Length: 114
Length: 236
Image 1 (cartoon, each protein chain N blue to C red):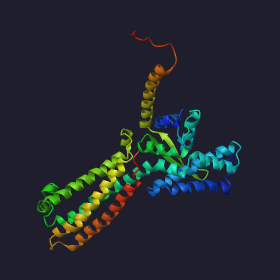
Image 2 (tube, each protein chain N blue to C red):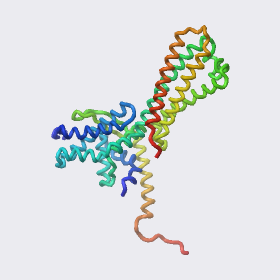
Image 3 (cartoon, rainbow over the protein chains, first blue to last red):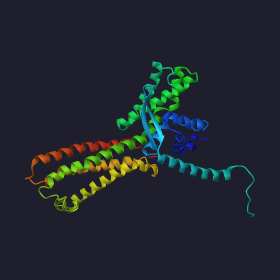
Image 4 (cartoon, each protein chain N blue to C red):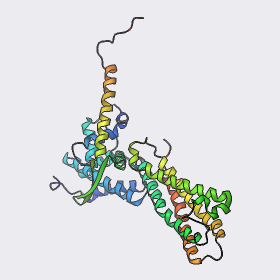
């Protein structure tokens, strides 16, 4: 599958990996990559702007810390982020159910007689 | 886990620094926003390098793979353009909103004592100076109102409202350009025609202060308008 298809769901994927707890930017991107079995393979540097956009929208909070002498930015879901994730999830489930019903091989649907 | 890590050798660090340098040269926007990006990506690059070292790669291989994984600097810079344009636009709009009442107040302190402006008694369009100025004066008032509206629209379009708005990366830079250009136009008008309307009897220190404030803001606003235009993402 093309990464472009997943890109449309990037915000939801980023929120989803933050659901279990705060992560720094690279860990978020790695979690999306490994969680998608490598299907999601956008250049890492181009995913950071999406995290910044989510922060601007108030869906995640970012905090700075110092780890090993480097500044590190850690992201955490906000209450609004949790709500957005729940909404994204239910939209996706409805969409996936509808698409599976049509695309998955199975007994041919009953056809109206000509 | 961190304690057991190898330090990156100078040549490896240089590969990461060169990459960040190439990226820094391509980022346009507020200094703070650019520094945030570079610090965050440095941390990510070091993490990516360590992940390769843990997998048995040499330092040179690890750094090269990390840099490749992040994407070429031009592509990464382009991905950041909408965010940096939004940061620029927001900063310009907030500065205009904060300084607007200050400059306006200074001009009022010049006009109110002679009765040309009566902020306590009537709305601006009924002030004697506007009545006397005819349609150009009313047009100036309309430009002020439009610039204020554009500045607030910019703030709204770059804050939490983006949660519900469709992604329009060119909107905020455009409204911020409009707000800054409008403000500059208002200052030029105040400095030229406005100054002519001031009675000769007016005390000169408040006039000098208001004119200086307008002159400074006019220069800054025109620079800000050009900057917002320059950072505006290309139409997609």
